[in-house]
Length: 312
Image 1 (cartoon, rainbow, N blue to C red):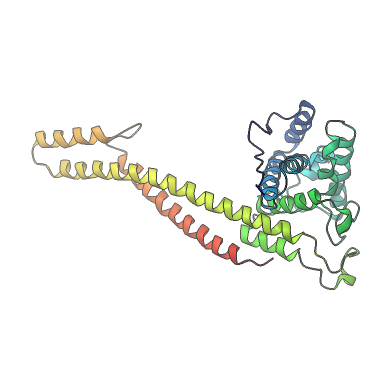
Image 2 (cartoon, rainbow, N blue to C red):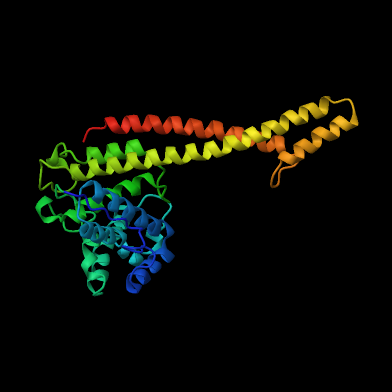
């Protein structure tokens, strides 16, 4: 069977930044209140789209699920900014208020005929397969597939992104957290909320496996982009090293004619804002960039090796 492919950002299928006016209006309000949330919604939508492709979902379901993801946090426009943008961890009371964004978002969608088909994203994205989620503590059979997918993408982006109230967590550690949440809770009797499905974890392991493939794709793409950048940078380094050779010969020359000859050779090779006086500084900065980017590439390759060994 031919695999259907849906590109959320393909102008011929769905224009992510030219959505229905009603939907775009809601998202603009969301973005004006909290830039973190707006960016988060975009990230989650992109992740969900690509996860759906690895799950071999139909193009129509992928489109539907992606829009649900884009709207999943729409209810946060009604959360007080003192809580939404708080610089430190939320108190228990504030967390209870924050949790209301699910039902508030659901209400927004249900009251608008154009948003109503995508209300599932708002109401289900914090539900957990074992019944420990919110707002309705639903268990596996009652949580639609789109809710299970969006939950994983939402949690992944929320953890790896730098937010006001927490420090950044690495990608490998984030995936380990999501994998751990696929496992049943130990000592469910003593867990802080009732565990309805004691043999299940919070996350759907099939969805997490698909997310891991997306993360590997992203990492490999990042490596490819850095390598392309380094190829271009090395061309510039080689050119400036030629300038450096001319400069050394100019300094070593004993006659003014020779000095002028090599100086003109230098100027022919310089471009943009480069000058005889600053080219060394620019050359050294390029070398430092190459060194740091190569170190980053090495780190990314190491991450991929670890990620590929993760077991869900």
